Image 1 (tube, rainbow, N blue to C red):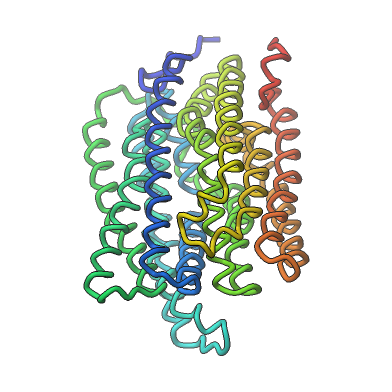
Image 2: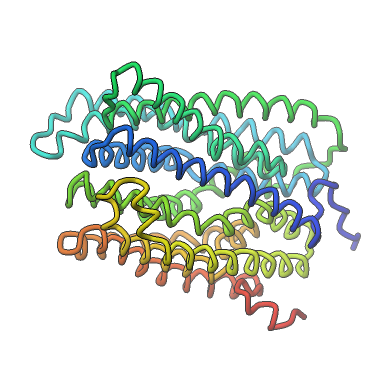
Length: 452
């Protein structure tokens, strides 16, 4: 049997490469979250009305939930196919996969503007839910922009073009939103509403998407022909995109429910002001997720390449690197957020300091997700994505049930507790599955187990 072929230069990995690329991704991710953090403070101050800010927060959650649902799981599967084909020196096959996925997404994404017209025509709510009708219409209109932005983000990561994958949505988008918000605030004589801000956020995503797509196609055009082309294995043929993406889509649906149902249900059950407070605490808690996001950006495509070339030892190395690179910085960031919860929340306005308990609970939920290691990355990048949907669907059921029981009595605090419950349930199960299916240890303890 012939030896596995050597990987292209951009797909090789080592500890030094991991640290170098990880440092770049960490800087961009930190800068991006800093921009988002500053943006939310700016918007809360410009609106100066917790109810209107809550409408914006509710609408943004809906916008990104719908946009991610329209992805159908295709971006991450496409990224896996591209990384695997690149590892086998098949650049033409990778480009064919990209084009096929784009066509599939185009059909999916543009159903949502049609849905917005149906909402406008048939939804005539009364009472406190009336505030959400216009917000829902705006979110549906701009959802396709989010879908394609996620697609270009993931395929750029597959090519290891980290700047293109991270800078547009994480840095340029919040900066564009801030500039447009200040301009509208000035033109409207200091009056901004939640609907207006959500429309500004959608326009920002669309603007960044156009830049992102243009740069990606330029880079891909320069890449084509730079490497030899081999036959495309059946596992990575374009006809396998949807069947492979289906389990990922189901898992993503469940994950999106867990991620965005909190703000949406808190808004419906406890009012826009409570949704705004939860949204602020959630944005702060995301600061502690920088390390895991960075490590995933750096190592995800390398896992696919290691699996495609049969390098199991390297796969264990990548999992162990990911576990250590995520846990310890997250723990340090989480402790900082807990100790400085009140002054950080007060930056948004005095009325938001009541969310300090929510912030602490959400930090605990994030630590649970990080401790179990790169479980989903490992399962998806090794072609075992079919094991994930059952876990995530049951976790979403547990999460929504907990929300229904806890939010009416405890409001935003109950929603945060629901996140802890669902995190414990899903991450423990995924950790068990990842080791059973691949033989890889995903936690920081993996390095202590040795590797045969």
